[in-house]
Length: 112
Image 1 (cartoon, rainbow, N blue to C red):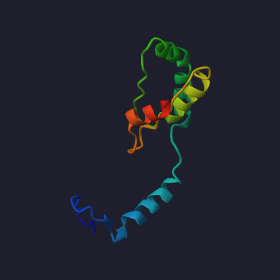
Image 2: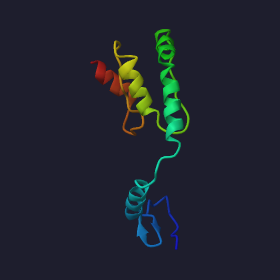
Image 3: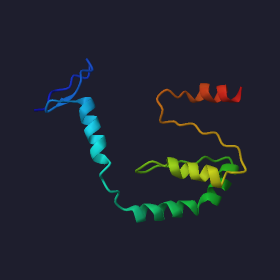
Image 4: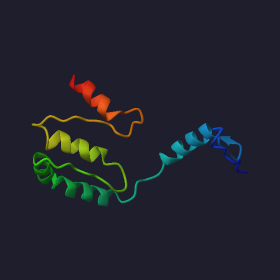
């Protein structure tokens, strides 16, 4: 039995009598047992990106930015790039996935 969700009233979702919180916990627990596929392919792709680090540094020094897109998180790749290729440079990390982030205010606060 699937209950209808009323988004305007932000009512709790219930699937087969399971609360949203219980469903989330069960899903999180079940997902820990999933074995990642394509680990070798992902490792090869990351290594190919690492070979581009010198080009990325050059692009940044020329005033260009970097845009990472595609399936999956790029956070670990960017952190590795910053800690290895940019070790001699200043780096500001802004976690843009946080809803509470206001880049203008946070940057100005960090500078002052």
